Image (cartoon, rainbow, N blue to C red; front, side, top):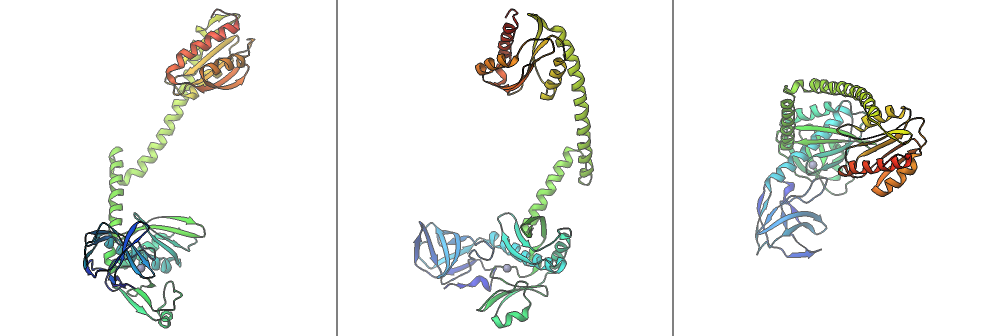
Length: 399
Ligand SMILES: [Zn+2]
């Protein structure tokens, strides 16, 4: 078994490791040390990384025979100089101790016990038993008060008999001696992780959000440097947005509401203008229609308009006595509306079917109204000319 030196000292990051045999497993090389400051993944906290001699320690696992240090590269002959990545360890100390404080704060402020903890690469989460998330900020405020009070964090071992008297937040079902992490006059938990020496090292605990997960609430949070980086990123974002709206951060909410309102007004005004314009263009199109057999026919490639405009135009032409109209909207892919008014003896479905199969368009409808899409925008004009020729032929006019 490995003597776990990080239990008594979470700050020593360099040590001399006695030589031990390298073992191969699943294509990887690992070594179990007699004693080590490297923390193996357990209890919701990820492992340390670092170096052992000339090799990288890329993963650390807790196994029956001891703590396994998984290596990349050749450590060289032992004894080895071992070095733990300082930034990663410091981050884990902050996040993990912050979790202890936040979990106890949820108990004291909202009677909400923690059922699980996850320390992720960007944020941390705890799942807590909580009815309503309305007053989560109360737990956050209490947790940060404990941080600012710089309370001493200690770890010690107790016997199973001593456990009951301690009033643990989450009592373990233990038979052996157990390690207690004690936040001065605030929280006691059974835990094997690495922690800070005083709560002030946590710096800040910030809840980022809550989400209901089955019968618990998942609280996402960050501590320490992560909280600072999160604040910086969000502050920068707000400044950038403020710059775009040429306003201060505190005015942003009101300005964005105003912009949303303005956009809705503009959209309604633009829709109204489009409808009016469709009326005028329908007049002009009907007037420009050329004779085709016993009827008149107009074909038009409509550019720079919306599908709603094309439908409005079609609806106005549809009511014209003796008029056949062919409309294509020049977008990618183009959309098509083909129809005729009363007094025209023509089933457009026949013509559409043969033409669309030929050019690769899709669509369908009634004898006097077809809607479709397909083709690419570059071919719309030529395809429209082809359709016009076909319809003219069906009407008995010259093609
Ligand atoms: Zn812990």
